[in-house]
Length: 294
Image 1 (tube, rainbow, N blue to C red):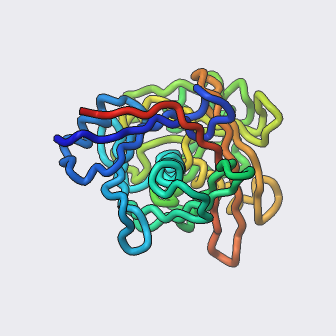
Image 2 (cartoon, helix red, strand yellow):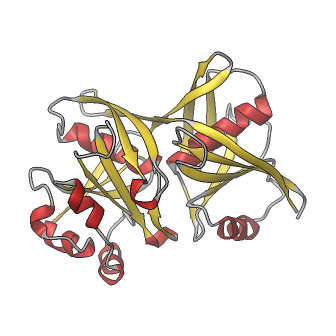
């Protein structure tokens, strides 16, 4: 294996050592699938990304995403973090949009600047699709909660903008904090579902934000994720579909990762445009380290 330059960034972070950590490997075309998977396991972050070439193909940069357990077709914070590295290290000058060629297709990332420094990055996700609706009782058992702690005004549903999640509305921050995955029941549940990870949320928050979120994904080797752009994109579509805030559009801030000491902030925009819901997820990225993988 040839040497690869890699970067460590914090995504959805307002300051260093918050948000969700990501390792990005540049010019990784010489790596085999097995090497990428082993590196992702070694890094032990929720995902690790590999830029296959510093040259564009079909207008975008080829990128692959691996969790410690397997390759995934799409994930949110790796998309934003990788676009940041491409602008910062490969392009080297301000640019409005970077396109990533991922397994699910091309995902555009828009970059907003404060002076010459990147302020916030936005990714436009695929239109959400809505699948299976769940009975609250087995979901409450998976979460070790009482069925009454689930907000029964809204359905528990599988939603996908490229990677599916089970979206579960809870009534209170207390219930959200106490949620704990019963692994036997979790793995029994996901045997028959497209979605393998669970997002729970509530309208009470630690800071002055709109929602608090937790995401569990043992199937992907990630017991709890500190910040999840793909899951929150699904949530954005869900909130608009069910008119959670009483409107056909949202522009909100979501906090995640507070329970595991990695406070993260995500911006969500979504609008129902006559049967199709436009979804964008935004956040800040901070460079932490650069090195060589030998």
